[in-house]
Length: 158
Image 1 (cartoon, one colour):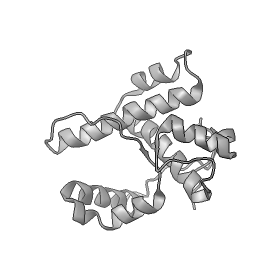
Image 2 (cartoon, one colour):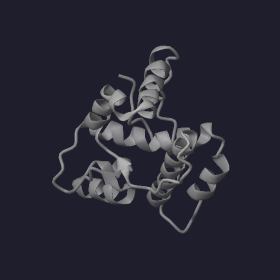
Image 3 (cartoon, one colour):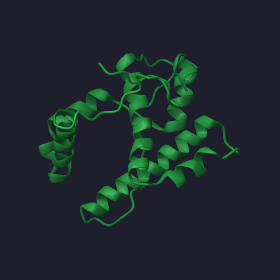
Image 4 (tube, helix red, strand yellow):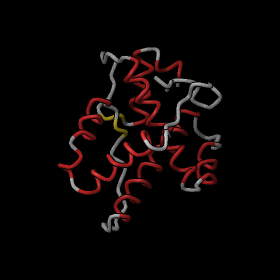
């Protein structure tokens, strides 16, 4: 994935594999924040599924030999996204599974969503509170500074 992100055609391949929203194409200009946000989103799926004790399912997907590693990660990302969207809906009593609609890929839109979360109802406001609390009170946000992971070190602590 690191090699792919360095070229326009590679970013297009990643965009297609992960169904990025908004997508990257061969003319999209990406900066360091775009790249960090992409990798943070993907590694977040792994962190969440480990925290929810779904390591076995994760390993089954990641060790499929019929797919290339990028496709395995993309497929895992889709399943994790569906799980967490469905979990959120069940947690807030909607009780339906959410289909995969793509991988959010715009850091600026994410920040704007967090800033205006109160406009989207109590679920979004709770998410905003969770981000604030985990960052300011728990000092909790994973980085990849050590580089000892499948992701290398694309999400440094800044």
